[in-house]
Length: 253
Image (cartoon, rainbow, N blue to C red; front, side, top):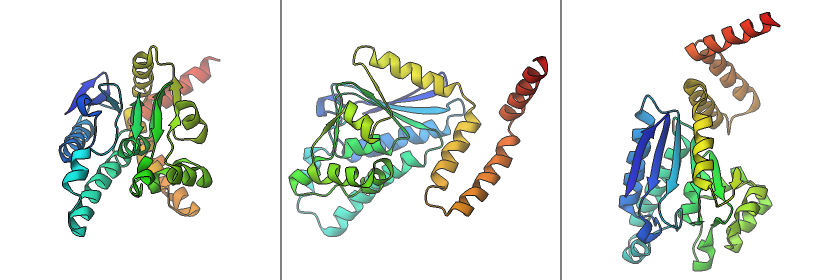
């Protein structure tokens, strides 16, 4: 259901349930979390890439799950929601920068998967949206993430309208990082991931950690957290070598 391969410092996770448009169920969540855990524990990996098999990235929750849980008790619904929420948190708190490569449709919980990632690369024809309101439902788990990505009023409109947006509009409002032509999308994603993974792995991990850590901090606390990470980063072997090369280059000029 979820494949994970480590190649050239990139952990490539593939959502592999194309017959169901990579719809989310319990097995999908647990399998994806296991793949993320494997990627985080792999010493040779510096970046995690989430992509999808089939025509769509992820169509949201599996209809079968919605049917099975329709008459569940409140505590059962709460547990189900918390499991998916933990997956989103696992992506945001992952050791690596996590890149989503989205083609086709990313809707509902599937759009939530993309939104949880640090970077979203989109094919030109991709669509993003939260259609829950059209079912009388609430995109509750993604709300805090959407507020952090988009201007407040645009975020609210996206959630209450339920209308999908195309890749270019998603880029304009801040839901997507970059848009590539459909033709050659896979190669563009591979090139982007390889370029990012070529950076210092310790520096990438520290940037990711500090970025998440300081998101809700008061300014002075964020500066202190930054000072601590600055000191740690100076002591890494990558930084020592980088400084030496920089100084040597300056002396030659």
